[in-house]
Length: 272
Length: 134
Image (tube, rainbow over all chains, first blue to last red; front, side, top):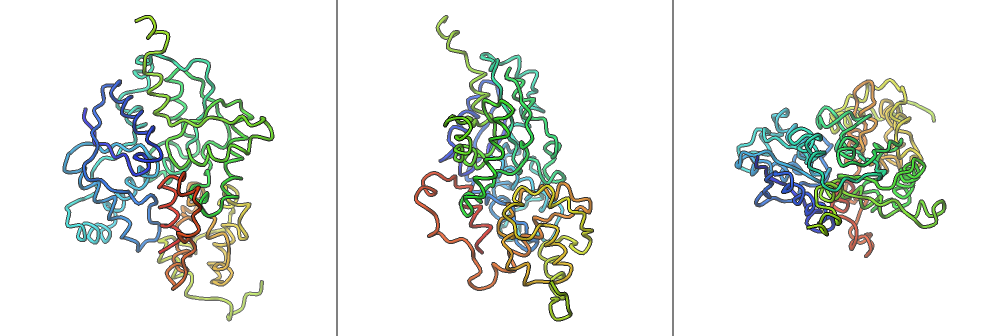
């Protein structure tokens, strides 16, 4: 099946490895993902004030372009996914928003492009059982933990992603790669998001709680789907230095682990 | 705090309900929003207190509060509210009341450090400006 892929700004610059490994893994799984033409930034945050229509222009323009291709739109970055799902919801359910935004853009769009996160493709269209079968280098013995953050899960009635309080999709994913999925209390708490720009101390404290909790539970690596979570979790590793002598907890995009597990291991390469 | 007819700004509730689309008046002060808020330690007013002050129309106390600017819109409160209120929308309502005034912006390009410009993902910088400048 062919999908349109929306990479988003950060995956083209600071988080290139996220897109590269996603494409590598898609190829290994036989998924055709073709980048949407002429996409632009989704706006990064969904406008929460009721009368703000301007920030909907950019995501709706990309959604309308995806509609012309007639394919599902696959996202990777949690923020892009959040914005697209909610922009669709607004266009479908809010007549004033639809008329203003589509009228300004001069496009005919009714909010019906299906936006799916890459993880949802893995779960619902490939299936974690099939991924398990396709894994060539299982991550056996590795204690990994999901860090969900906020934007994929909430608000549930618009995102329909997983249980917002007790999600399981990333743990199921981790197990399908052969690793152990460790549970810890802060996996759905906010990392501080863009407060790392304006309120650094606060973001450091918030990340500190998440990392220490993961460390107490023996986590050897965190698995994320958001470049901003990745940045914050990787940046404030010093929260752990007092207890672990400078050693941090590595942070991985889920696609990095997927591509690694789907590839032939070094031992196999030697044999061939 | 003394509540009198002079301190109460009667239009505030109407204004924030219009911007946020949330029925602030229906908050019953159960406190679940404050109980689960990850930014609580940096707040001078707890989320449920902002709701109460809004119901009472005490605009000045809300507008000078740091709480509006440390809410990261993580939607944890919204996921837990038994009145189905999204407090991140209410906080945004108060932020836009301030941001839409002349000189109301609270984030400026000059405050970005060279390290942030080099390392921070675009997502962080764009989100920041979208939230704190209009």
